[in-house]
Length: 207
Ligand SMILES: C[S@@+](CC[C@H](N)C(=O)[O-])C[C@H]1O[C@@H](n2cnc3c(N)ncnc32)[C@H](O)[C@@H]1O
Image (cartoon, rainbow, N blue to C red; front, side):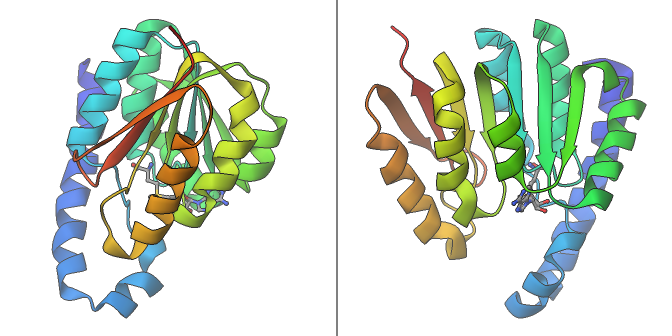
């Protein structure tokens, strides 16, 4: 990892530590009301695993559904650059996407990322495939509709990684429904890993 990327990730990690302390002082209702102030990141273990998967698979087109402030975006873009791929990242909130875009520029990764602002479902419907790698990490009730929009565009051998399968506990019902949904698709293999907040890794077709 080069020094510009490492410096940006270092700043994110400092913010993650501050937000972790702040979140511990908030009641669940307060946290829910202030949710959009927080990075809500996949965390370092999941980020490292995404990096390993991408460098092994060498996807051409990567999609991140849920940019937030860009922590996972920097990891994905760094791996995309290493394998000659392009990352499309999708976020509803303009200010979050702007923050992510500024940090991607600081990290020297702008040439490898396309930012989309608005409802991810519209962006996914418009995006031309084939899509080779996906990080699914927006609000959890949208995982199934987003998966279904992407499904016809996923390449043979594509990976879909879905975060928050085990944590937070409030997302568990949507997470369980998502896992049942993807596992019912013909020709997929899928596994739940207790990494970070819990991730479901799904591989489409392939031999
Ligand atoms: C858990 S955060 C993403 C965290 C990010 N992947 C990371 O690891 O740093 C989920 C994000 O999804 C965004 N989101 C929620 N609904 C959305 C929608 N319909 N379209 C696009 N983004 C959406 C939220 O604004 C929020 O920033």
